[in-house]
Amino acid sequence: MKEMSVEVLNLARNFDVESGKPSVVVSFGNCIDSTPDVRERVEASGQTAQPDKTIANRVILFVPDVSETPYILGSKWNLKIEDNGSISITRDM
Image 1 (cartoon, rainbow, N blue to C red):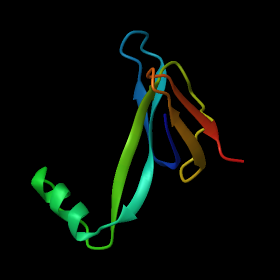
Image 2: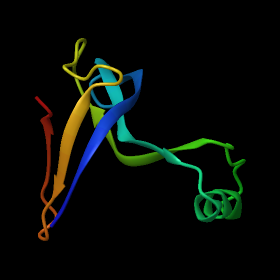
Image 3: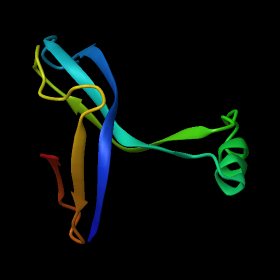
């Protein structure tokens, strides 16, 4: 099992392809220090490394058929990935 604290890094409005109704794309992750190892991996993937902080996306959800969402930019969450692949995201109170 893997468990970590994450925050909402990005929210984007979208439309559900199947229904045509509004949906939301939610990116959960962390801002991590841009250590030399991190910068090297970022640059190896063809991106430009930032000098101080790097965004590490952990989970990106496409939430269909919603016009409002409980996910707020910067809000804190707990991400748990079980050995069987089950994923849970709960609000960090």
